[in-house]
Image (cartoon, rainbow, N blue to C red; front, side, top):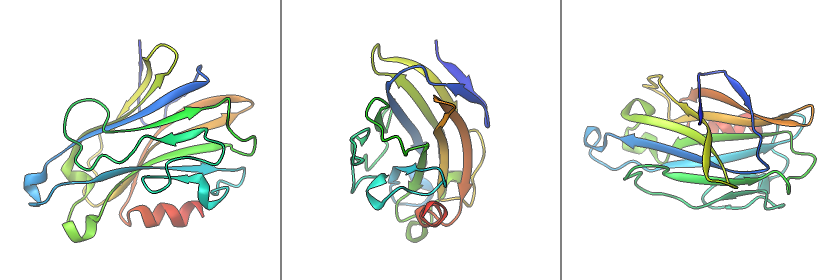
Length: 184
């Protein structure tokens, strides 16, 4: 049975291979145009900075160099139930310099479309054990992000040789660019 996390809560990830599932529903009638939310993954070293440009995994760079992090592709609408985007993580392949994996969701072209996370509901991040397809952890965002166009849903980090997941739920109003500045 999955553990439902609260913001800031941390739990061990006891699986070497797992899938990060991200989901959301949007209120497209509020802006007149559809939403395109995008998952991005920042793979960080000891200094909490991206190890290299190729360690930024998103819809235009679907794999990390060691193929330990693989984005399954861009969902342009978010329609339907379940995961809207997925990222597969294989800790058996991860480079030893990797200390943290941050998962961020942004709204594509948010400024021009006048969209923000206040118009997004039922947002979640979940961790699914690849060996038996069971949900281990889930974090549902409950905050109202009325000006933010990017939200860091969670992070996976290595503490004393044990990989853990932390529910973050922190937004920024400058979109993906804010996170690129933060982690570069």
